[in-house]
Length: 114
Image (cartoon, rainbow, N blue to C red; front, side, top):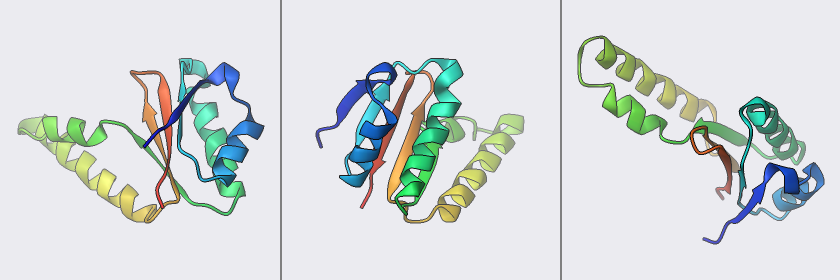
């Protein structure tokens, strides 16, 4: 799938709304840490304003939970993380869009799922 990539400075909320209306997937890159949460919140509002459901998740979270599942305190943390991930997936069952946070990469993946 071809996905367009935009920096946060070059894409407006109006352009994002058009992409959501057209059921497009895209990536927003070069997101400063101070703008990360407000950008995620804005994306959620835009998607939900169209009567669509979305799921926000952290890219790589399953791998992190798996790595910590090797025993001891980290094993308990891994188990709890896995349970939390499963509960979150059930609570946001069958979303129209997924918003993937890649904090280390400073980008956000917005993926149309249906």
